[in-house]
Image 1 (spheres, one colour):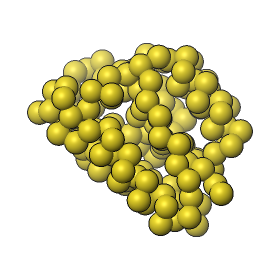
Image 2 (cartoon, helix red, strand yellow; image 1 turned 45 degrees about the vertical axis):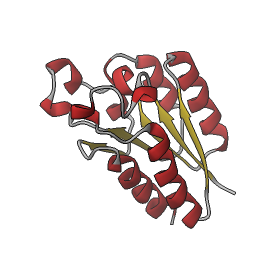
Image 3 (spheres, one colour; image 1 turned 180 degrees about the vertical axis):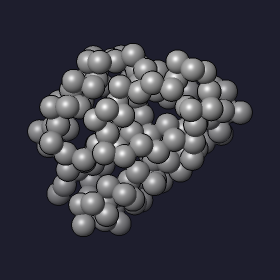
Image 4 (spheres, rainbow, N blue to C red; image 1 turned 135 degrees about the horizontal axis):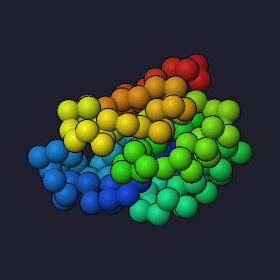
Length: 144
């Protein structure tokens, strides 16, 4: 069975509790449940992971490189700082989608730069947690 990886960066473990005016009230578990339904309906499996540690995200990207059919990543603050995550993604020959819950382009200037976007096959921002489902729907369609 083909596996889709969804990786979540720092502070996303606080989703639903941290700044709900920006990030909403859904939890990361709510996002995982919604994504699981889409993946199962497509006959795929899901590896849904979160870490506050950059090296852990990189290790999971390396793992996905070997065994996944696609990867969705919300790198959170690492979006704007991590060349190491970009390098890991550049080593992947699978579709990669970048997701942001908020519209980063309406926020602080430093959030407008994304290293991950330099590799991503698509970027979804500002659609709330539904952005994960949108990215997943697009990935499933590409896998056709």
